[in-house]
Amino acid sequence: MSEPTKLVKATGAMGLATLGSRVLGLVREIVFAAFLGQTLVASAFFFAFTIPNLFRRLLGEGALTAAFVPVLSETLSKEGAEPARRVTNVVASALFVVCCGLCALAILVVLLLRLALPSDATLQRLHLPSGEELRLILSLTQWMMPYMVFVCMAALAMAVLNTRGRFFVPAISPVLLNVAMIGSVFVLRPFFGADLEHQVYALVAGVLFGGLLQWVYQMPTLAREGFRFQWNFQPRDPVVKRVAELMFPTVLGVAVFQINVVTSGALAFFVGDYVRAALNYADRLMELPMGIFGVSVATYALPTLSALYAQEKMDDFKQSLSDALRLLWFLTIPAAVGLMVLAEPIIRLLFERGKFDAVATGHAAFALLFLAPSLICYSTVNVLARAFYAMQDTKTPMKIGVMSMIVNVFLAAVLMWWLKEGGLALANTLSSAMNALALMTALRRRIGGFGGRELFASATRTLFATAIMAGACWAAWRWLGSQRASGFWGSCVQALAPVGVGVAVYGMVASLMRAPELKDVLRGLRKGPRTEPRDGR
Picture 1: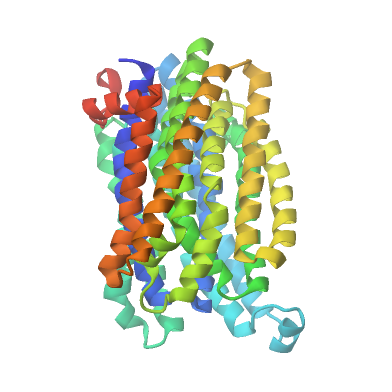
Picture 2 (picture 1 turned 180 degrees about the horizontal axis):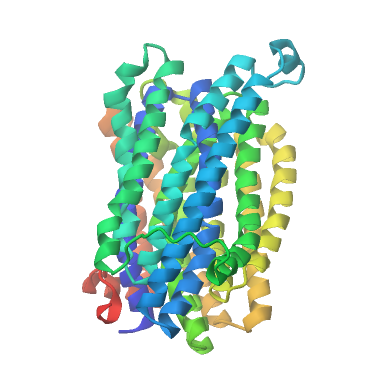
């Protein structure tokens, strides 16, 4: 079986699992939109949720995965399963201690901040939210911090399973978080009071329960793979030191990205109460194709590239990287352009009900127009960064990430006064594009060319097919809009029919151009997504 077909099969397995998670994530946002709207409570919750997410990415899915997967892959390749199990338990024990310590420290800091809040008059002079509003943000943050412990341990389990060739089970675990958060709105909300400021704590309970489920759910699959977590806390162990050395630059790099997120969220409050919520809804729509395509390809790439680098197969390393990028662009470029063209009808269909009105639709659609291109950039960054991580180089992505953060903060501070939510989204897109270009340049200097002509030809074909697709989507939307269909079913037709037209046109044009990426996708889909590990592992 060719490597592109293997890539499509593995990506298909993760894509199917992620599709379920992201669809439920959209359902969650639809429920949240009706429940919270674009109120200050909504912005407070979304901003507070970024804090435990910051630590999750620092110690879980970002830095730990980048540092741990190459080390575990190398141990499996050179020493076997038993040493790999020991490495896993030593790292898991250290991670649990660190996460619990950081959780306790963060809760203490938040409590001190709540006690040290200045008067409302002082806050008003500084153009900041009122003391009551800030206390809500800090209180929500405090109660959600234990989520960081649960989800970091779940991320470690995911890394182990990915290294063993298991992609489907860990990819579907976020479904549990979405189910818990949706359920909290319908089941727990009545127990938390009558007003929105108290009912929002039902979502906090859903976050905590969902994070715990994500961790526990993966344990049976880990056990079948021969991995059982056993306490083995040895902070001076050479493996812990090696993982820590690799993690440190990545922590800084991921911290830079998350500081961007937090900074953009904080700047949004200076522009308007609704802006943070509008950005959140736009971001949720972008994350659907990001998870199905971008994250799936990047998740497959890290253990694959790590194993090839450990075996010193650099030609295969370059070819696998090129295959991943070609497939990634073939899928994400039309998805990003489709979101830009159809932002308004899609957001209206998904969110416009309850407290989410037509004005809110306009704000979220405007943000999505500028944010959607970052889908391509972030997905490319994810794959290129994992190529460096596979070579156990975590410093280069960190340095480039720092530059991108500076660019993003500067652009956000300038553009938000002109374009408001659109300016914050545009700053995000431009800084992520710079990040992708800088990583590609650095990687070419490190390993030489990796299919530059193939990549250029593939990107040209994809852009041509996407341009025709965009015209067809826009024409279909405008024609359907002229029919003056109203109500829920009218919104369904105006949003979904142009999507169907776009998919058909894009596939037809790609087929006429004999795009090899389309052939790889169809071949991989015919063989079915691979949910079991290769070579009988």
